[in-house]
Length: 144
Image (cartoon, rainbow, N blue to C red; front, top):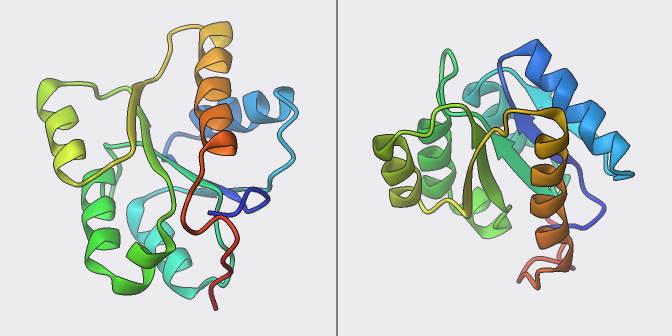
């Protein structure tokens, strides 16, 4: 994790992408934001980039590769596991089954998207503040 690294958002809905970016900017967070429409696009990026992302926010239901499959593939990769990028689900799919599957895949957080803009802003602020203040083994390590 790099405090200045990009925030990765894996979200297939353009309206939700807009809302995420707008809210993060409104919070004054300067980190670049990288959007991917499905887990496979995000995985391809993560396997090829030298960037050390700050945080990943991931939806669950997406085409090609869903959020649970993405997390499982990250866990299976020695390179990506070692990066230890904080991985948080931010989704409308908050069933007992999806929460259990997420934590079985060793996710660091699971949030159901808040129903209003102000509640969503509070939710993202909480997530970002937590990871900005959390001590992390890769905080100062840069991977190549």
